[in-house]
Every structure is written in C-alpha cells, then in structure tokens.
Image (cartoon, rainbow, N blue to C red):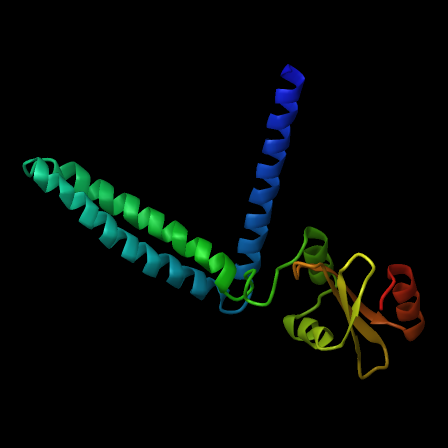
Length: 186
C-alpha cells in the first residue's frame, strides 16, 4: 500500500517536472522567435490590465463593509486580478504568439533544439527545408526533404505535434535514400 502511494506520488512529480520543462522550453522558443517577445509582453500587459480592472471592481465590495474594508479589498482585488490576468495573458501567448503551439510551429523537442542550434540552421534555412517534399515515417513523424542548389539535401523531421525532432543538413542523395529506408518514409 505504502509503495503504491509512493509510486503514484513519484509518477505525479515526474509528470509535473516534465510539464514544467515543456513550458519553459516553449516559452524559450517563443522568446527566440521574431515577434514572440513583443507578442507575449503585449498579451501579459493587456490581459493583466483587464484583470486588474475586474479585480478592482470586485475589491469595491469592501465599501459595503463601511469603507474601511476597501483599504484591504481594493488592493487585494487589483493584485489578484492583475496577476491572474497577466498569467492568463502569458498562457494565451503560449498558444498564439509566433513560435507558440497553435501558431503553426510546435516548437522543438530537446534533441530538435540541440540539433537545430548545433548545426547552425537559421529560420530561413529551416523554412526552406519545410517547404520541401513531405514524407511520413512509420512512427507518424513527418520528414520534409528539400534539395539545395548544391544538389545536396536538408531535412526537417517533426513529430505528430509539430515539434522539431531533428534537422539534417547537406545530405547526399545516397544518404537520403538510406535514411528513408531506415525510418520507412512513404
């Protein structure tokens, strides 16, 4: 019984850590995407301001207590409404800002981010490869293959959630054929 509870708590803690890591990675992806920081800041301020106004309105309930209560309820309402609104704006930005989940870019897995950065792939080069021929792997991932002017190929591989799994650059046609065979591209 105790070991079962321990395993449940351990699993929940692991999921919380994974979720926190994904949120941090997504936030980093947005902040490093052109226009992402401006979008996130604008949503946090505008939705936070709306929340502060709403919270301030709720805080006026303190007037019903004889006026002195408003000294406590008004600032508390402004703080809670503004803070909650700002968090709501950031949550909205996580899905709507450039680089966010619903904006057409699902971000990257840790491996995908490392490969993209480590191989010096610019956003322009990434987008160029994504415009290539799409193949579906046996595991459901999508591989985009684009021939370069040099005759070699760049490849972007995304999982089913649209997250970059890896990028490959300057591959020969023989290397592409071998990779396609290994991963079952169709």
